[in-house]
Amino acid sequence: MTDPNAFDRVSPAESGNWQASWETEDNYWFENFSSRPYALGPDYYDRFRPAFRYGFESARHSLGRRWDDAEPDLEAGWERYEHRGEAPSA
Image (cartoon, rainbow, N blue to C red; front, side, top):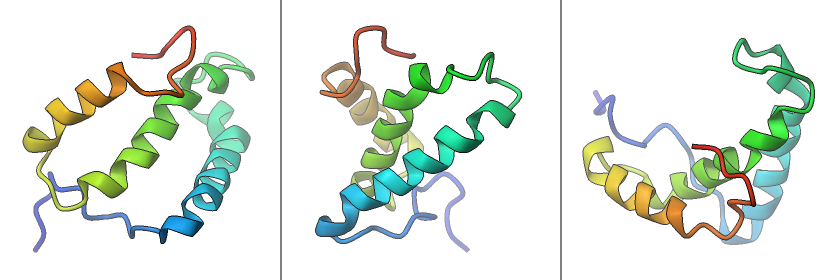
């Protein structure tokens, strides 16, 4: 059994396919975000998009790591993430 706190539920994409994978993920959330209970409006996804993208991109670097080990790196990375935007989500 795998550790439930490890990032091992994601299959890493090949480097050349990573951008296409993000576009697929982004399209999914753009279409489905408003159906989530935490969505406060139809355009609310735009506020969350940078955080979703950061999580998606960070997953391939954190595969197999426990949350307690990965969290400090993820926090530091978010502070300098290039796609964070003007009004970053927490």
